[in-house]
Length: 288
Length: 288
Image (cartoon, rainbow over all chains, first blue to last red; front, side, top):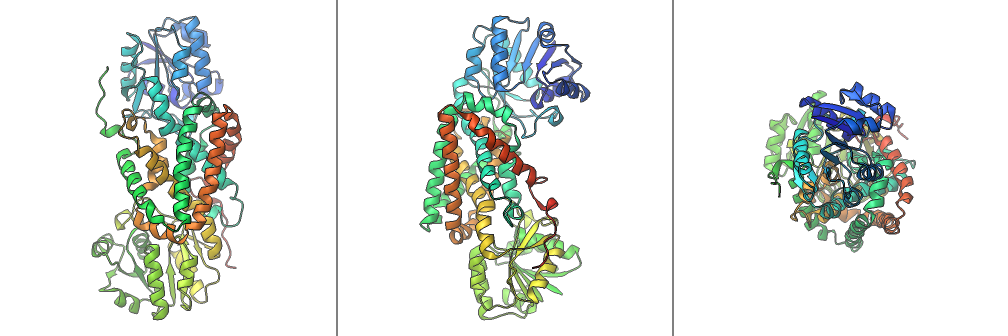
């Protein structure tokens, strides 16, 4: 069963490494020839396709691992001219617009691996990137594509989690898109003062971990904030309300009000451990 | 030269481990007998003092490594009944109130190591916790205490950075107290939904790193938010303004406005690397 990977950045190359480790034959293509060359050199691919049409024509299963705008474009193109692949998975961080664009493409399964890094490109790829992580898929996808998608997700070391696209987009705004925007906003605020005496020196490990995500490239996030902007804005508004409450408590010299917040947040951190993922304590979710 | 450490939690025990590795004789005391016993067992101390008065009476230099309220209390006590030590350093994350409380205590030097962890207690101690990190001290402290403090800071592996207490408190509100509050606020927001279907599964490494600090105990932060509340509130207000701008950009379907923010924040992250600290690229600051 030949796997074709479109886009050999962090996600695509990590999937290639893992699939090959499991014995799969993997062909890849990237519109950036340097990314494609690197992925091949790193062992993430058995072969580099001469072009996208060649790749699409020759694979039994396809993983589309490109940013949101490129995913939308590619999925629309495949919907109007379906390739022979029996399962076509995307990995975009926003699902509803992708599902809409894929209308009529019966082999398509909208999916999203809950894994990643603020680093990007094939150089950041890891064989174990998806190990034990949740990887959602649209339960409304058609068979046999849906079963093949579940099998591929498991083959890549991840846990298949059925999640309707609308629920996915609403929840991911809170758990991923909001934290990303927050890291950027905090980074912007600190950057405005970083050349003042003492500021860089007073940046310790805490601010380091709270801004690290901001190294993730805009090219990856542009499409996400375009397609899921309303959901994200809603979560941002809720956070500003929480922060305004905190400011008011501090200004009125009643920080004790924050004690309960600390307890609540520490409880969440404990549930996300170890390794910042909840993978270990969630039981396998059955196919609906 | 006998070093006495009051408070054998993360900071005190890490200092003990490092000082002993450098050949110092270290005696410690903690009001929590279990912390004291653990620190001794871990090799962070040569000896455990029978009590605080015994420790204070017998040391040439003192490191006060206790939370802010306990620091204020202890420093006031020492100011009214000075021990024989030639240098007394605190490590509190807020400096002005401590300097005020220490008024008249000529051996006192207000300091702050820019190092730490969301974990606490002697069990989290590390010999290299301060390695290469900035460690600020009040340049207005008297001699010979000031020089002895600089020497001790270097002995512990850190880089002594002179910084006036008022500047310290203003800057640290931005670089440490704000990120802490942010991790807690985000944790609170996510915790409110974490039992809904799919939410815990969609918590990936990003939300993990953005809430990790919230594991830091309230007992450590209560005094900080009490003593530096106004400064922190000011920074929180600035962040809510930035976030409101972001929400407005998303709501009006113009996420492109965020592109520049991403670039600015990524620039900051690059300057904080590696390991989330700026230590490596800052030149030694001379004693003023």
